[in-house]
Image (tube, rainbow, N blue to C red; front, top):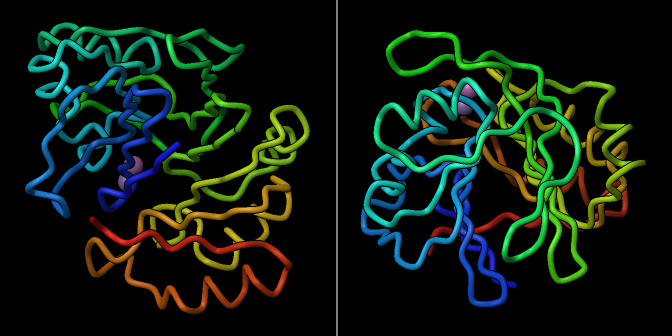
Length: 215
Ligand code: NI
Ligand code: MN
C-alpha cells in the first residue's frame, strides 16, 4: 500500500497495482497526473472535494463512487459513476468500501441538492482506512470505531467548517485507530492551524500522527 497526499482532503491510495483517488481537489498538486486510476471517491458536492473528479473520470473512465444524488449529478456531466447510500460494504476489484455518516452539508457546484455528505471506510490488504470527509465531531465515530475498527484515520483538523485539532484528537480516541492523518487545513486562511500542535496532542494520547508531505 502506498498513500500519496495531494493536499486539502485529496489522497491517492495505491494497492495491488490499483489506484484509488479520494476527493481530488488538486490546487496544491497542479502537476499531478491522474494515470491508471481505478476508482474515484467523492465525499460530498462542495468544490474543494468534487475537485477534478468529473474531468478525471471522463479522461480515464474510472467511475466516481458517491452518494446517489451526487453520483447522478456526476453522471449528467459525463462521468462514469457508482451510486451508493450510507450503509453496507460494496465490493471493488481491490477490496471493499462503505459510506458512513458525516455531519456537514452538500450541494453541487451549481447549487443543487447533492444528498447527504459522507465519509468512506476502505478495506484492502487486511487494512482498514477511514476518510472522514468534512464533518464535525459526532458520536457516529464511536460506531465507526466499533464496527469497522480502522487502522488509519484521515480527519479534518482545520476548524471553521469541520472539526478542529482538539476535536480531531477526541475523534481519534473514539475511532481507536493507531495512525492519524490530518487533512483539510492550511489550504486557505480560514482553516490555518499549527500542525505541530496536532502532532503533539496525538502523541499525548499514545497514537501516531502522520502529517503527510506533498510529493
Ligand atoms: Ni464541504
Ligand atoms: Mn471542505
